[in-house]
Length: 250
Image (cartoon, rainbow, N blue to C red; front, side, top):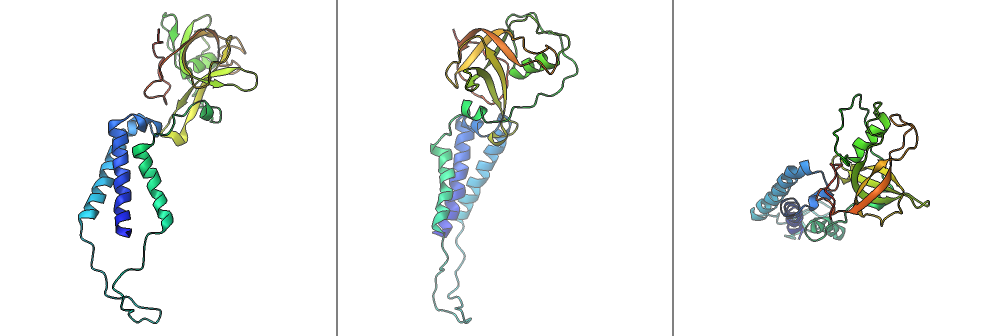
């Protein structure tokens, strides 16, 4: 039983990694897209090791082993076995094959750390497009750091999912961003004003202008938007990046 368990665990884990990374997009709930080749390689190695071990004949067991006094006890078998609790290790492996974890959303975002916005010394001119598509990160940088006040009076479009702001009934448009994997996820969020909070986790394309709170172009400015229009959109395949807005559904 011990040998069978030792082969079964890496085989299931390897098969689960290959299934998740090769045939589904579910791996994006665990790690960022760039790590997909490593997942595939890890799954293949684990599966190969398990198959190699299973095909290798077991070594000969001793005809007996010493008792407490150093004498052979005459038994020709091994008393060691797999502890029952070790079978619980199969659960994570099986989950890769048959259970997809729920996507991170408003519950996680409300309790996660905000992603630090890096300092940007200079900003390129913005295109004349209206509404202007921006990521939540770019919008936040422009609001708090752009001394040229390029966002003043501009209509922008942002996309993300709804996170309730708390007891006051407000809400944030939010993105969860993976630096490497789900364990290091951080949030980017922009406060929304002028419309009641939609249901949590709803993905929206929101059009509006900067909500004047604080001094635009300085650290006192709040990353906030006066909402003029909010339209539901389909969640992106890779929901854990802060990419340019998606085209809103009609």
